[in-house]
Picture (cartoon, rainbow, N blue to C red):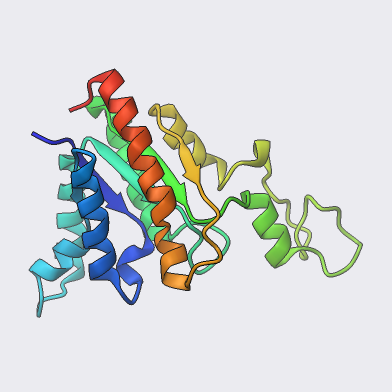
Length: 199
C-alpha cells in the first residue's frame, strides 16, 4: 500500500482549488504516494457543507496519513494559513503520542519570517530597531526561520524540513500553490521514506 500524505494548505481557497488538488494528487502518485487532499472531503458533502462534518472528516484523514505535507506559503498575512497551522499541530501531537508522523513544509517564497514582517509591518520611523515592528513589538528572528519557531521546530522534530522555492513571479494562485516547492518536497520525502522505511 502506498504511504498516505495529507496535503494541507490554503490551496482549498484558491480559484482553481479542484484542479490544483488533483494535480498535486497526480504528482503524489508519480512518486509512489497517495495524496489526501482536504477538498475531497468538501466535495463528498456537496449540498451539505457542515463545518462539524468537515472538521471530523479532515481529522480522520490526518489520522490515516503517515506523512503531513504542509503548504506554508504566506496566506492573508505574513504567516501560513491558520487552518494549516492547526493541522500541523494536530499531526505533530499524534507524532508525539507515538504514531510517528513525518512532517514536511514547503512554500513558494524564500523570504524568512522576520524579513516578511519587517517588509509589511516595519517601523515607519527610526524610533525602533529592525527587530521590532512599527508598534514596537518584537519580531521573532531565530536563525532566519521561515515561520514562527513552533511551526518550524514541529516539522524538524519529526525528521522533516521546510523546502522553499522562489515562485513569486508566477500568478497569485500558482505562487500560493507552490508546485516547484511541492514537487521538490515529494522528491525529498521519497528519499527520506525509502531510507527510513516509512509506511
